[in-house]
Image 1 (spheres, rainbow, N blue to C red):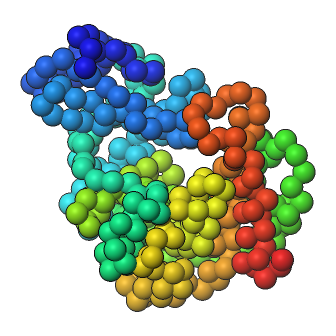
Image 2: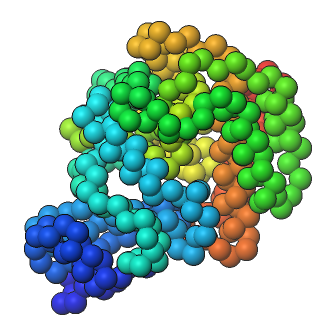
Length: 341
C-alpha cells in the first residue's frame, strides 16, 4: 500500500472517516483505505479496511440524479429486516440519507466472505455433485425468501403488490423507450404479446428483483449472503423464478454478458429449478412461459440502456461494447418461450 490512502472515485476518505468516528466510535482503528470493487451498471461497491477489519460501502453511481432508481434506503431496509431469517444477508451497520459526506446517500455493512460465481470454469472446478448441490441451495434460498411473511419482519408496506405485473411491464417499456436508438421489431412484438397475456398473480411475497447465481456469495459450498436488493419489493414471486430460469437458459450468451457459470456440469436445468421450487413452496408455476419471456424483455431493456450510454461515451469498463448484441437475442428468446417464433 502507498503511504497515504488515495480516494477512489466517489469516496472522500477524510470526510468518511470523520463521520464514522462520530457515528460508530472506535470501529475504525487505523488509516482507512478503500477499493472500488464494482461499478458502472449499478450501485458502486467499495471494500474499506483499516488493516485489521473490513467493511463494504454502497452508494449510487457517480453523477446519478434519480434517487428512486438507486435507493440506498430500500437496500438497507430490506437487508436489515431479513437479518436472522432463512435468507443470509450482511449485517447492516450505518446508513446516511444525506449528501454531506459523499455527495449522495450511502450505507455501510459488514464484509462477508465468499465468491460471486460468474465463470463456468471456476464453478466447474468444484465437481458436478457440489455444483448441483449449490444450484439446489440457490433455489432453496429463493424459496425461503418467498415464504417470509413481510409483516412479520416489518415490511408490510414495502411495496404495492396490486397491479404489480402491469406496472412492471409499463416501467420497463418506458425504460426501453427512453434509450431507444434503433428499430427492434421483435422486442416490440414481445412487449405486445406480454401485454395481451398478462397472467393473474399468486399471493404476493418479498421479491428480490434480480435473483441469480452471481448475486449471491458462496463460501465453502454455503451461500453466505444474497446481495443487490435495489429492485426488491412486494410483488409477484414468480417474476424471481422466471428470471432465474431465463438466466439459466441463456447462460454464457453475449460473450459472457450473461454469466456462463450456470453452464457448469451438474448445475440444475431450468425444469429442475422449476420443479424443485414448486416442491419447496407449494406454488405451481402457472404461466411460467410468460414470466420467462417477461424476464427476457426486462433484461433487453436494461441491455439497450447500457448500449445507448455506450454509444454516447457514457460508460466505463470492459464488455459494454457487446451490450448491443443482447436485445435481439433476448427478444427472440422471449418470443420462442411464448411459442411465437
